[in-house]
Image (cartoon, rainbow, N blue to C red; front, side, top):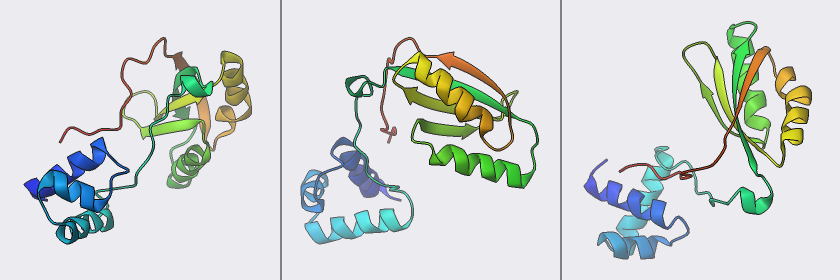
Length: 150
């Protein structure tokens, strides 16, 4: 990956909906070479996709929860099943495999504390291998971005 690829990625982070021709103008390339670079970055897995960043509160999702999950067992099947189940839940925005006391850290958004209680009882505690759950509620979102420092 060279400096021009990084410029393209930075421009795409600023304007993910922009056309290859527009990005080409920003980075100083003609359309076709820029388009080829973007396609290569996608095929190499550098560009994972393009998402729209939404305001959770504007959509009534006012509660952000960070749930630390400890598993009862740590065999490969359990880990893979847990990860697949967490990935399938739309309330789970992020899921990290962790070092330390917790095996996983999940970032969850819901409309209310009551909704989280229901999610905890009906979903989290029933994820494959889930043993203990420690939940922490965010008081305020200070920064929300998907932009990487290039």
